[in-house]
Amino acid sequence: MPDEHEPVMDNKSPLNGPATLGVALLTGDPKKAIVKLSGPMIVVMLLMSTYNLVNAIWVAGLGPDALAAVGFVTPLFMVLVGLGNGLGAGATSLIARRIGADDHAGANRAAVHSLLLMVAISVVTTVLLLLFADPILMLFGAGDTLGLSLDYGNVVFAGTILILVTSMLASILRAEGDMKRTMYVFGASSILNMILDPILIYWAGMGIAGAAWGMIISQVMVAVVLLYWFFVKKDTYVSLSWKGFAWDPATIRGVLGVGLPASTEFFMMSILAILINGMLVMTAGTDAVAVYTAGWRLVMFAIIPLVGIAMAVVSVSGAAYGGRHYDKLPVIHNFSILFGLAIALCTSAITWVFSSQIATVFTYSPETAYLAPTIAAFIGLMCLFYPFVPPGMMSGSVFQGVGKGLTSLAITALRELVFIALFAWLLGIALGYGEHGIWWGMVAGDILGSVVAYVWARAYIRRLQAYA
Image (cartoon, rainbow, N blue to C red; front, side, top):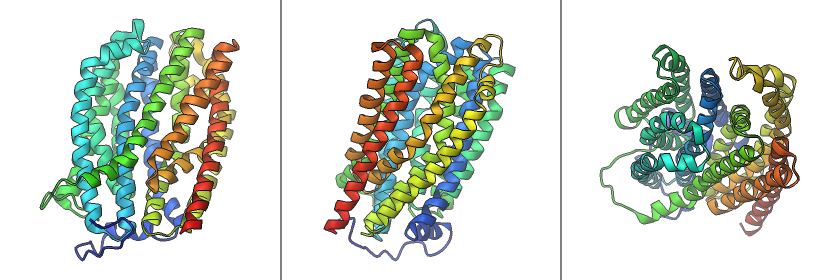
């Protein structure tokens, strides 16, 4: 099997169409590639995050217990998202490195192995979640909201294979620089989801389960379209062909080398959410969890453009590393951070000015109106959180792109489980500042974690260029 740095000519590669345009962009000017590749991802992620906000708004109309129930399911859902995005990042990194090395056959091999791996993992994950959802949610502190949490969670967990497989197929498209079609299908899915939510929750009388069913129906649409592109239309650069397929442990190791650490990063985020929920329950009760659930959805919405940039960075840095264009890596790192910082500062300004108005969106019902001032306070404080996200996020994405998944994992572990969790506990519980102390701990941990990530990435890039 050829080395990832060894160019391998393959005369079966597509010679025209959107696939070739994507690959040309991926391997060209890194600044242009980051802007053009992240643009569609930002659009689709904003639409998906808009759905999350709209979902929370509709669920909030059912009362604070329903909103808290979604909050208790969220850590488990983040595990699913983590598996999808994490293993998808492993596939994107390996495929992009193969493309950068002009190894089309190797890119195909990586894509097929990645998809089969994801199907197998999704089956096992579905069974485990459905069997153990009850005790896990009780462990997370669901308590009196367990029934509502199960109504929502069991539907979501049953759709695990849809969530994971569509994530992998989208990751393969991102690896070859085809972001636009990903934008189209996931954007349409988010719009469909927003339309279905009020219909299923209220008109059909399904309550909180209707929110979950809206997501599942939308995911079915995504799966159908993606499978059509790969197996019927067949106009992608990477081919998912089973002809001559042979199981290759080395390719699996290449995917898992980045995919497992990246998935673990999302798992750590879930652990952090569980810890934060637990600390909030200890200091201020389930109302504090409802505030955090609503406010954190806005935070997730605000950083979605940064996630879109980070996804582009994985692909672009992977192609640069695979082609041994190490001079592009500092450009990729610096430009992506500055690009993200500009967006983060604008986001901070907007949310600071309109924090009170935004809070009312989550508290429009009489049952949740009393939470508005606290949600507004949380949103206002998180304005200090956003500007420090880009250095940490983009640094981790560079490490994922070059295949250093464990390094990216170490950075996330420091930020999530050491800095943020520690400061939240210290300020919120040890020093007795309660709910607001936990919020300040999250901000302080984010700042320190991002500084460490940036310094680590710059040192690695300098060493790589020195030994090139």
